[in-house]
Length: 190
Length: 190
Image (cartoon, rainbow over all chains, first blue to last red; front, side, top):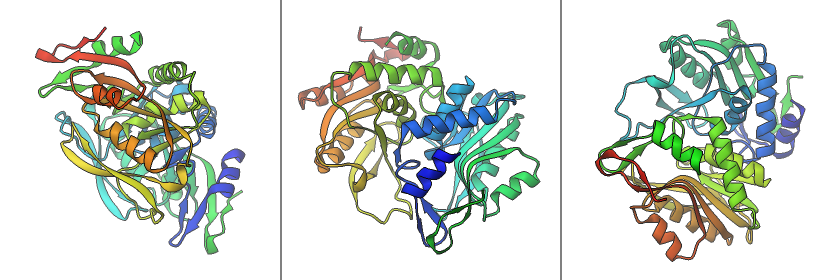
């Protein structure tokens, strides 16, 4: 997606440890125009799939997934990271290790928001080692739902996540695929 | 806002301690059609104000604020609750006590995302005692920005937040104002 790649080159920057900072348009400040264009792109790419629900993970996934869910005319569910005192009902859970935060957290979705047999599109902002995506897949499968596909805004193609998902047979659509961040130089796959 | 009030009556429910659960359309599952209508309503109500940026707080505020920011054609910044390892730059911070979670958390916005003199619209999902809104106001003022107004999806009018904000002279627009949750009965102000 050219607009996204242009924005990454213009506003993104690297930190040591293969970290790409995109907080001016993905995970702290959001550019609604770009986010709506991302949603449109996801909806187009998955137009041939039957999709009943979009699932993402808080917080940065929400803005990336909402416009896609709107265009696909389905509900959006975001997996939560901290159980609130409101949370007395049963939930599907899994542990997710964050590449950037270097910690593992339990995430959950309440059972009532995933109905057996639904076809789910998973959307997230980043794909690195695939931990968040695999965690969401695990939760969706616990519910007896099918994975319609996985939509990623920024894929770090030099890490293992994309290959893991493809090897497991999932349809993966990444809007920007980063080949390398070596020497703090951002290069794309194509 | 009638559609919102209808949805609260249809899908919301009470828990002991004046807690209103709206997790099927606000803070776990999101109904994009309703969320876009909420954004449109905020944009209409604040159409007479000059607005340079929308500010909210993760996670539940994001989906409520994104469509408004899109329609107002400004960027959205969400205050973050957990400093990530990416966060080396300077930030404006404040402590916010959560009514539902019964705990205090430091929230922050990186300084580079708030420019002196900007007029900021604050949007959040709930207004109870006003802690989150007052925290965001504090951060916005630290940056030398002006408050154009505060937009709230669900105001618990029987708690002190709304009065505090009005007493401080801020323009407050709440889309649903709850008069009482007594005996687990949801009644509105008007």
